[in-house]
Every structure is written in structure tokens, then in C-alpha cells.
Image 1 (cartoon, rainbow, N blue to C red):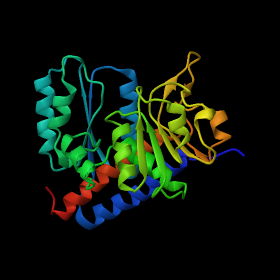
Image 2 (cartoon, rainbow, N blue to C red; image 1 turned 120 degrees about the horizontal axis):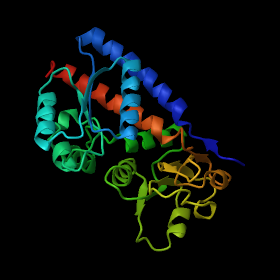
Image 3 (cartoon, one colour; image 1 turned 30 degrees about the vertical axis):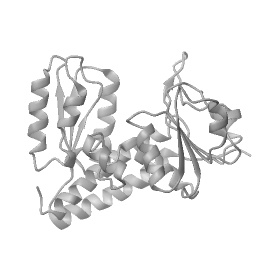
Length: 288
């Protein structure tokens, strides 16, 4: 029997509808309109497309967007001066710095300069530390979306054996922590893991974020597992596929997310959610 689809497009639209409603309520109640600053340096076409999609999503739910497109020649000091200005701007509740940045700019220095109170991507060391403690403020958008997708299946996370394939700071580690805080028993796998197929087969919840097309095959998945595929890989014929070999695995799993149309839309929805939550916190403090 084929798996149920965890449809990121449908789920993200439900989330966006709730955000639009809460955004309107916040504005009516406090006069605060959530604001996101989108900072893009250089001419990378994929980055321009990502930012455009994020901005359109913001506008659709009533979030104000401050668009900062800077030339590829921008210096680190110029970018840091802009971040400092945005940190102090009361209209801005979230700051998104689109990666990658040009080679003359140290990404870590720039991301660390973003105020932890406006870190809509959830990458600041302060917010990562809060997540480790189990008291998160901003959670990274993709892992937060993954958890929402798992929860949407109705399969409880508590007590489940969860396996995360991939240990990146952006996806693997945070999603493992989020699962742990929801009382799953979590194993994190990577390139040095021995007998990876056997470890994956032990999973009732399997999250794959390794960046290799169709890496996880049907013989690596247990019957009835919940499988979330975070990977996006372009094949030689120009198609986008995930890290999971979708068709065969979908014959064994109980739930599976597609690529495209799975985690991608949820990542953007969580960026909107983080910006709204930041504005709600600002309203609770009587503004900035």
C-alpha cells in the first residue's frame, strides 16, 4: 500500500492562512505590523528567486518587507553597517540575510551581528543555545517546518525511534534537538556511521538531509515509517529530486514528503511564523 503524502503546499497554506489572520489581529490590537528585512548581496540567480518568493509570501499575509539588494562589490563593513541599522529599526522584527554571501564577506561574522531578537532564520548562536537548553526563541525555519510536517500526520513523536541522516548546523542538528525535546529517542547519522542502512531501518521517524540524490533506498526504510525528505538535488535532465528514492520508499513508508512540494513551502511558512512571533513579542513589550 502506497504511503500517505505529507503535502507541504497544502500544509503551508493552512499555516499562512493562520498567520494572515494573526497578523491582522496584531495590527488592529497594537498598531504593530510585522516587518521583515530581506538582505541580498550580489547577483546569484537562485538567491534572487528565493528572496522574491519569500517577499511575495510575506506580502500575501500582510507582513511588511524592507528589501535591501546590494551589489556584489559590497564590503563587509558596509553590510555590517546595514545590519546594525536594521537591528535598531523598530519597524523590523525579522532580518533575513540570504546566503551565500560574496567571498569577501565572512558570513559567520555577519550572521552573528544580527540581533538575536530579530534572527528570523534561527541561526544566531544565542538562539541555537536556547534550542539546546530546550527553551527556544527563534527556531531555524527548515527544522521547524519538518517538525510541523511530522506532527501533521497525527503520528505522535513521543517515545518513537527517530533517525536523522545528516548533521548540518542548518538542518540535521536542530531537527535532532527538536525531536529530542518532544521525547523521541534520536540517532544522528553521518558519513562515518557504520551500517547506515541498518540504523535507518530502526527508525519509526526518518528525516533525511544529506544532499545526495535518491540516497535512501527502499531497503533502508522500515514498513510504516514516517519519512521526511529535506534534500533538493537537480538531476542531469534538470529535474529536482530528494535524498530519498521516492517511488520505491513510498511503497513501504506510512507517510512520506515529496520533493518538490514538501519541506520547501514549509520553510518559507516558518520564516513568516518567526517574523510574526517576533512582532507579537515586541507588542508584548510595548514595542521596541
